[in-house]
Length: 387
Image (cartoon, rainbow, N blue to C red; front, side, top):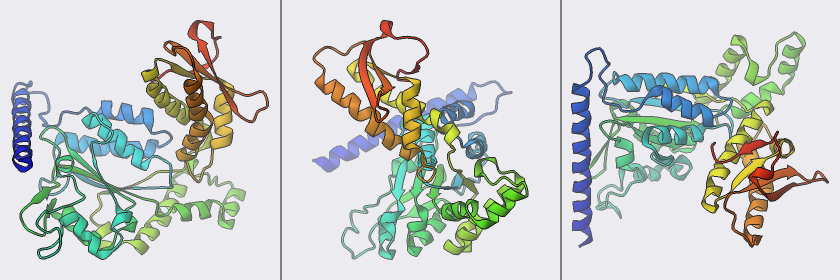
């Protein structure tokens, strides 16, 4: 009987969670009186260390995330609202969604330990039922189906839940109305009234590309040219206070044109991600190559890039408009594909072999060769599996 088995599995899991929560509570009781007592079992410095190793060139955004985590960690948020409601703004490919993945990994141990809702799938008004379930009398009303994962949203006693509403500007007005209720009281009741999802232990993050086009137009406009001539440098990564105010004004105007005031007013914080500059591309190449190196460990080999290969990837992959995704595509084309072809063609055991990537003599491609570690020269940029 599948239903009974599912019910038993659910009850067993809930019992295990309750036992874990009691253990945490006992541990808190045994702490020294001088220590701050908090139920959350993550350490803010550890989370930020992991995030700074993965999210490149977004120090301002990570500082905002750090401040949010400090408040969450102390458990002093309003108990009748979500722990935090944040809107991540900025161009595509700059790390907004990756920030949520790394945050989930740092807190829960897995990159996919968060509920992700792609709002472009909820662009029509009647799609609000995907959040609350079909109303009584409609097909599917008895099943109470929803795109929301209750377990990931509610989290546990010692770890907050995490949800991402991706590309929030594409949602319908009815969906926004549903979100207003969540932001207000931290609860979402199904249309049948039989189930409630509790967001009061949840970090709610939303992403949007709103304002990115205006930012690009501004930095390439005649106004920007005039500002340059009077000594105001308009590179977004180096703007001072005046530039930040102009940028905030552009984004605020775009938000007000897109969202209703009551929605904007319920967002705790807007965090703007900036364009990735060319001088940060080497760090991004290192990150992607390190991740590929980890995947190569299943074959017993590692990856090492020469300087010429790194420069080639940056030259052929850097595009400010598309950010890190452009570099990722270059990695797939010029590194992953040759590596895959080499592995498939290999007739020997690849264990303890280093795959060395260097720019080809004709300058049009990267060559991958399999070499023993002891035969390599110094001066290489090693990517051996640690991102």
